[in-house]
Image 1 (cartoon, helix red, strand yellow):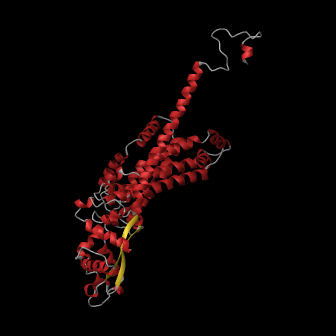
Image 2: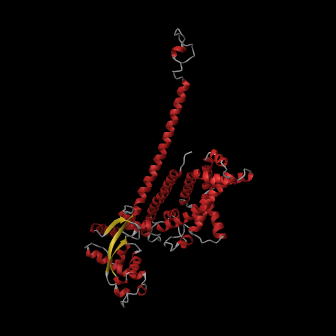
Image 3: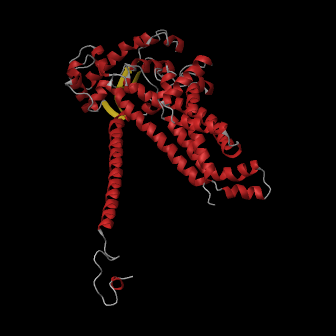
Length: 454
């Protein structure tokens, strides 16, 4: 239809109030303008979301990457034969009699000799003043080496020792000279000496693998703290969650969706499952404290208890996602299987379940990823107050011995006073995000691997 056909055979003008279909009237213009505004609002919302995501990632990377490097000092230490093994027995039990405190004299002398050997202008005459620039863990490091290598007693051994958190912070720009005016641990003269040591090549900043593979440390040794033991604790917790939540969640979903009668009892169960998925996670922590620790008397701060609590929290998510995957399978699949003589169970397990497997695996992995990042339930069972300073010595110990988890460790570091721990909290967030992204990537791969078309 054209304007010519609307205007009549003699091309007379259109009657007053009539418009052409090819010309936009005012209402059409308003609708088109509203559509354009909506598109703009949508693009603006996406842009704001992406902007906040970029700002968050930049903040995490900028504040967390310094935790993966640490300042070290190469320190030659004379392992005194007279002090450690005067009878030259070479027996580790004899060497163990010298406590960690007994190595301070050797370290002090080593620091004085190091300054003199490089011709550094040191304002300190006592080695104890120089010892403030190195970690409090150095005496234990030297003692452990002496016990493990008794043949080195009487020799000079070069140790790569950690600088103190203040020296490390100065090298990273976290500590300033003005801030040290109120600090009793270090002063500006120490920083002058640090500058000389850096120029002489004694003090270097390098990658710190112990942050990833090490254990937590006390308040006095933040430069030694690592997240490795907490990663092991999270691993054992996730094993508990996986081997409990997956079979229980999938079995419950299959029964409710395929076999359970539709009555008020199943309706109540379904409503409660949906409500449990929205319950705050700290409520599950209170439940775990009451049931697993106070009633069942399981060990506090153990990954087993943490895994049980997180299993309770993850089950509703897995059940809901599994039921949604089962519902997505067309009813014709079930009817076709039943039509050729298959039983109800055969139709479900041989035909419906394989087709729903991608969604089930995706929901399970996403539920595990959610559980991996939870902190609130772990607060109630004591996994935050525990300092994970040792690795478990076996599989049973991994489940039953007290330990921490990555999110709990990050929380613990963030609330400590030393700024070095705050830096490590950001570094721990990077490691946790890598784990979460890896699990999401695995979910995508599994979904594509098991996906079938019908």
